Image (tube, rainbow, N blue to C red):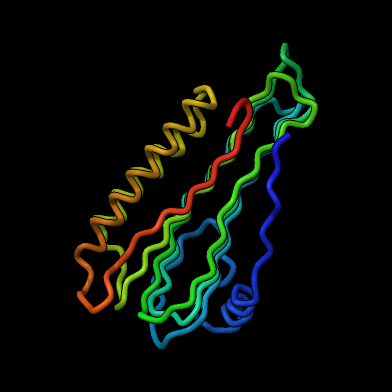
Length: 222
């Protein structure tokens, strides 16, 4: 069995959560609905995305994914959490299970002195499940620009296309190792799209950045 200690939100994340829930117009605790760009004065915000899949004798195959875009505008502090968990339990080599959970989270923030607390992790577990395939992948993309910026329609269209292909990949019957490779390929496309987008962001002393946090866990193999 493979497991990773779950990160606990730090003081900044907790503070961002409290303020994000209080402030009107802030995305708050995010669901699978994309947040719109925040407007107005700087504020604190928090986003959390979590994908969980569980396969067992009653449900031999379960595959789930999430592709979310959170645009917060100009912020003082941001807490962003992205998580994928997959479990296969109680199946056998002759009657194996397949569990896949993939979470893609895109967060855009603006400001030259923004405090960011980002956590991204995955966990795949086989529980008495011989020959099962279990894969959890968390991909978190953080776009930081010094001045207010939002993704234009062309960029969103390209991201929507990647989202559709992620859905198809998650539902596929590809072996776990190949699925991992394909998911990494889609993550590379997302990074390229976001870098193209920030290349047209307003210029300032600080340069726009696109950062990918990636964590994969799976059976068989790592």
